[in-house]
Image (cartoon, helix red, strand yellow):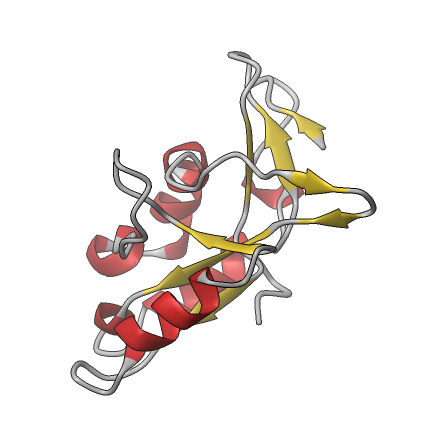
Length: 130
């Protein structure tokens, strides 16, 4: 877990699965995988099936229901998006730890497929994202 002090931690310190402890004490992790597919191709079902696994979580609404983050749908370039990494990972719930296995987070959005810049942005923020 990296400490989230602004002066020491920036987007270049991040990668898929890296967790950051914010100054508030909450811990949030960069997603380890992304589900990207065409609209009406079953990506919501894939998200719901993955959410059934106890060690996988995605962004959630205030009720705890899985939702699409759609964070990078408005991405303009990798630099601008990487400046907002705190906002991005704060969309994901704090991980729960089960003995030696850590809960992983994943991102899902069919909107990412239609924007050619999104893969570049995802690679800049999390080079080993699956």
